[in-house]
Image (cartoon, rainbow, N blue to C red; front, side, top):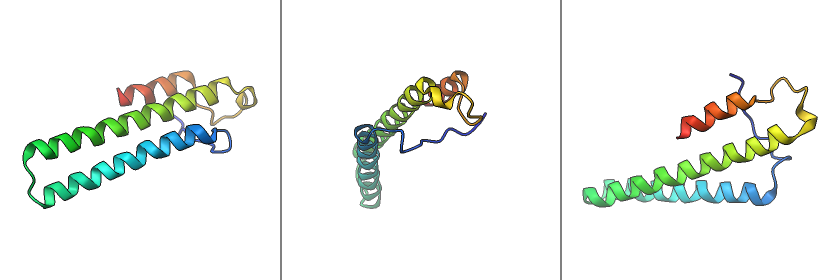
Length: 98
């Protein structure tokens, strides 16, 4: 399976901003979780933070796959690009997140 890369020139600023915001939110939640563990927080607090981090990362992943599907599959200029992912490859990546 070829590696899927995101060409930032082809991604709209709004889509990129949404993904970055989701990843920053996950980063903040992960930092809060680490702090909670370091401070000996109760299990409920740690698990709640873990669930929030997981959900934020999942959403970012789905947004990236969705954006890649739209850009790669719809762009006729990529028809002859050997690195262009196939629909099957994109589906496999999507399923890795499911």
